[in-house]
Image 1 (spheres, rainbow, N blue to C red):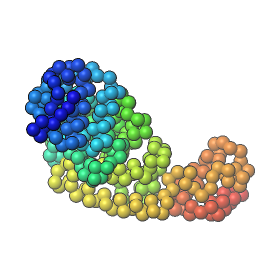
Image 2: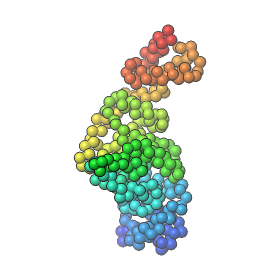
Image 3: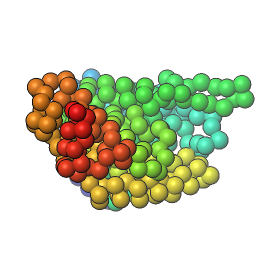
Image 4: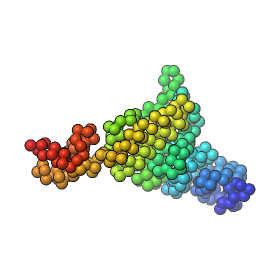
Length: 322
């Protein structure tokens, strides 16, 4: 269906007819364009603009498949900027972001443009090899801003609670598009966390890893680094004076790397003892009491009240029993 003529991407046949026959072809040509860097020829561009709305009638799962390929390629930002009508037809919730003035001294772009630049920055920070959870989180991290906008008496815009609302919206969007559950859950968690205060301390790192372990078990460490890249990208896509926030995250990254190198403890499965040990030492049957003891051990290890050493933990259990 596609061919390159005179350094532009063309549709073999009448694009108006082809796009009306199968709206997914519009996402396919956008995907090839952003992945190869070959521009779409003017005739096909006009047809995309005329028929983009047709994507609203396409099966969401098939739309999700094409979008997932665009997002995973690290070129979603380019797709947003070059083909906004197609992208907003594919994800209608993005349409409200187009031209939405943030009325903030920290932002030089409207919400939609900011999202596109965050996508581009995430790709740059990861050399184009970004986790799919991060790629989707970048695309949807501010999707709730229009719905949460408020203006103070000085005319400054605010978006209170937009990460939480954005996480809820992203969960619905990714569910509708049938994006793999593990990617959906991870992306939603990154969106929920993307604007939270992050002091560069060991306790804050452990708390973050603990939180990620509860929603995305086994993915805590890569998602923690992905969150840093999302926050860096968010900072550099604001205004020049806000870009320094990105470098401040380097301190957090240093603490995170040091903690990972030590073997972080953020869940009971990282403890040097297990439930069987608790039952044996404490003379308890499996149940809530054992779980509570394991959680208490975890709390003490995470707060450096006990070392994560088998003998020390067993000794504490023995003393606690007595």
